[in-house]
Image (cartoon, rainbow, N blue to C red):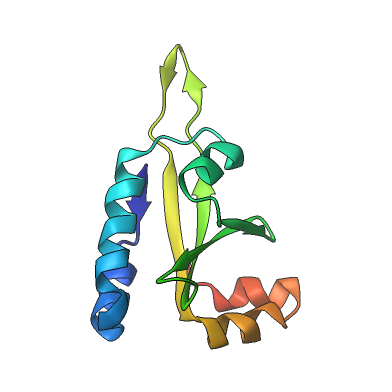
Length: 113
C-alpha cells in the first residue's frame, strides 16, 4: 500500500514520542501490504474499525487512534494495483472520543485529506 501524507505520521511520532516506535512499525506493515478489502486489512490489524467509511487503527495499545481513508488494491488488466492509505488524523484516545461524539459531517470536517 502507498501511504499518502506520511508526513502527518512523522509529525505524530515527534509530538508523541511514546508512540514513535509503533507508528514506525505500522508504516512498515502497511507499506508491505496489498489489501483488496476491509476483511484483508482486518487480517493484518484485527482491531481496525470502519467508522463512516474511514478505517480507525489503534496505536500504542489503544492510547492513540489513526484515522485513514483506504483505497484498496484492485485487479486491472490482470495486475493488482498498489492501493492507497490516506492519513486523515492521528489523535489521542480522548480526542478520538470527542471526534466520535460529533455528527458524521462534523467528523469528516475534522479530518485533513
